[in-house]
Image (cartoon, rainbow, N blue to C red; front, side, top):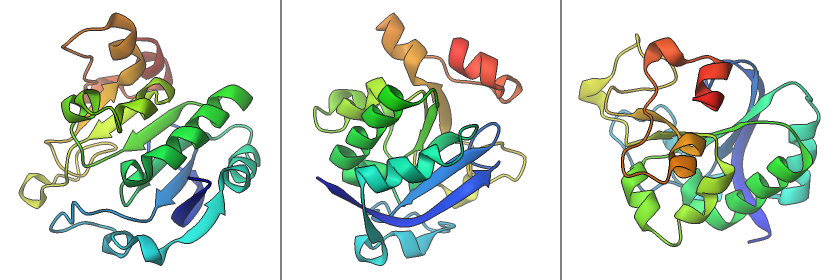
Length: 177
């Protein structure tokens, strides 16, 4: 895929991961979670097509902000987001967070979805469940969602993986645990 359907790009957000981030909002999601904060993102046709080069240029505009893939669900365009993540890692020092309704275990088992994992630093997984919503949660909408240090998990090649606790949401513990 040479182009990605993007609903929005938000610069310097502080709610989609630690520190200032450039959030890339993917269009397209069939999870359709009741109570979703972004239902306009469900339809991939609601987005605007961007090339990988265009998105990379936008990301590079802010040399200090890291990157978050969210949406919608970026994994519904996994090929394009994998190419974008590869380029980000090759051409910048930015870390990448990715929000998805898929579970980490299911992504690991999927040849199609797992290709993005080596380029993602932190994954926030799981569908939003309105009954488990809490405003006390940082970087998550509902308590079933997990913040997973993907790099540590893949480096250790283990079946269990580091799930970050709320007290660990700082740059050093997330990226170096």
